[in-house]
Image 1 (cartoon, one colour):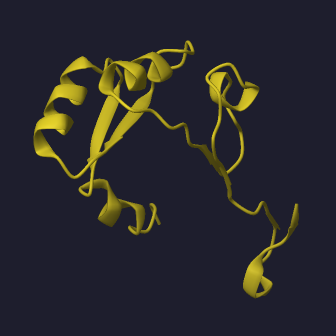
Image 2 (cartoon, rainbow, N blue to C red):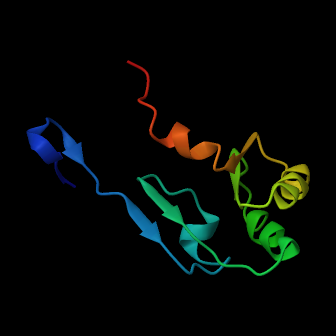
Length: 99
């Protein structure tokens, strides 16, 4: 950890993107307690569901697609506490947190 950008107080952990993750990698099957996201590639919906259910955690999920039919099909098959669909989630990523 390092000092926050802009001279803020406290410690800051640089966010990370971990790409091309296999479904058995520790970063894919365990909770990561830092600002990080893992990205796995797939070619069809069944393979995406296999990746999604490869671990025991299920608080939230997201579907990133431009096709509304794909989004509807995938969200109907995902069993998570919350599932959002992009691009609807994109504006939310820019919202400030609670004050």
